[in-house]
Image (cartoon, rainbow, N blue to C red; front, top):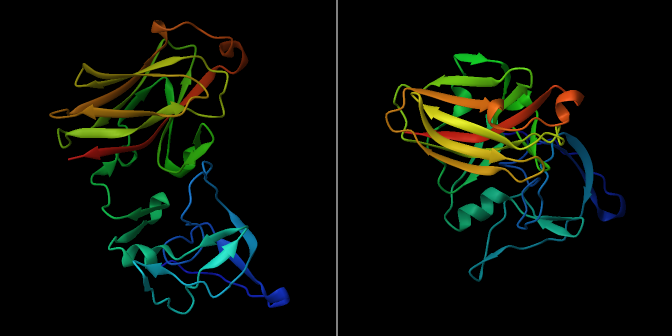
Length: 252
């Protein structure tokens, strides 16, 4: 169970709440019923919230709100307990701690590619999940694989052993925001030596969706081949660029 750390102040009939970024599933912080927040945030902050005895109505019936789970107002938006509301409409809520993800309803099947560490790589540097510090088009990701590619080598690749255990792979791919001057790249996905998919990515663009049939694939290779594209001035400036494969899920 995720713990909550709360400090109250009665000044001006408001209360001060100290929240950790990990407070998601059972707390009131971090989940609201509105869209438009593109940039994920991490860390710790002290915020002032206002309680107004807010009621929650579901299909015309008042929802019973347990003590300690009262909705509140923060910066003009109303925050409500996610588990309470989702339960009222028949949707289970689960918390994926290692990936800092809340699942509402059916939890996606399969496992992440990042849990299958590459058993072979050449001319690249790999980083996984939190340690990679991945961001694409302003959005940060905590699950995935960061591939740092060096210009001086014509080809770099990473090989994963799948042993024909999966039928599909889905995820997002894009340039890391730390390298905005990289040029267009082709990333190739091979299954047992056969090309399965080509993703052409450009700096600053939103991540692309990748959906690949892996039926019968024993060895998955991810290849970046500099011989198929033109060099860019970044070669003289940085010497490398970084591609992120985020939320890649292997489905049995």
